Amino acid sequence: MADVTMNHSITERISTTHGSTADFVEVDEFFGPGLLMTRLLVPRGLRRQGYGNKLLKRVCIAADASETIIYVQPSPYPDSPLQFAELVAWYERHGFKRAPNGLWVRLHATHPEKR
Image 1: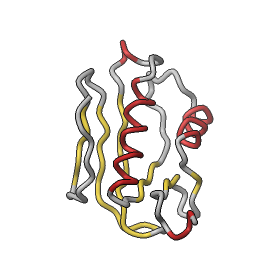
Image 2: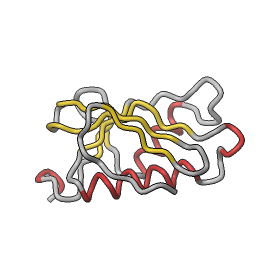
Image 3: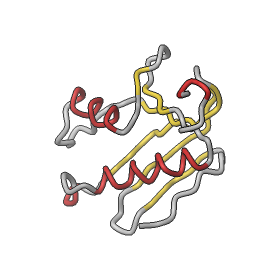
């Protein structure tokens, strides 16, 4: 997999060698500046094999290392094997919590509200 870094660029894409991608845009939301993950996509033939988990774990590690808040609005793709509730539960297993602004948020490990 490719190394993952967060440098707060206007838009950012994280790609892996197997073709999974995560796209981000910079935002200033409820908990402060962070990145909104606008897409996390695993190629259809590779789904349900752990690639999404691996990619999201790497995103979370990079977010912690760079003290970046990650926001997401769970929305399954039409051909996704996950329903909305399953997708929300998946994000929650990775540390995301529903925020008052209607998004799900993952605070970085050193964020004051995580202490």
